Length: 71
Image 1 (cartoon, rainbow, N blue to C red):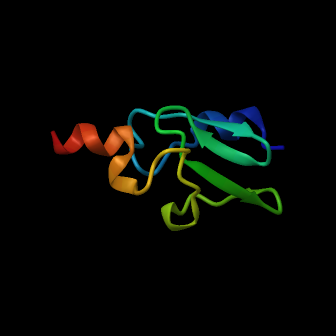
Image 2: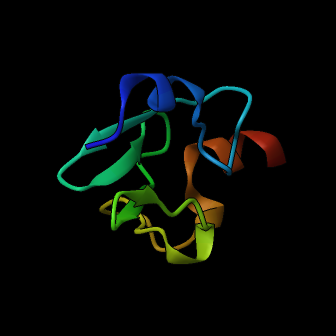
Image 3: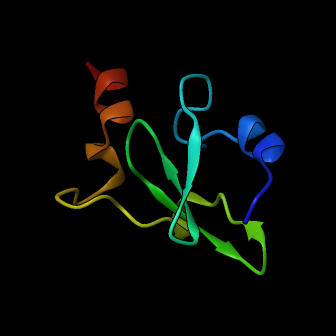
């Protein structure tokens, strides 16, 4: 379990200025795009390449934070 102080500092690397992360079932979940980052040995892994895409999303380009930037 990560401390609340750490969680308030962490942001999704796909859109760091607008997103917060929440701990959910041993991973960090972006509150905006729902990208899930693993927590390994108590350390968050905020590498996009290792994140799990949300259901119904086939690629990073389909994430809400990315579609809005290309419009």
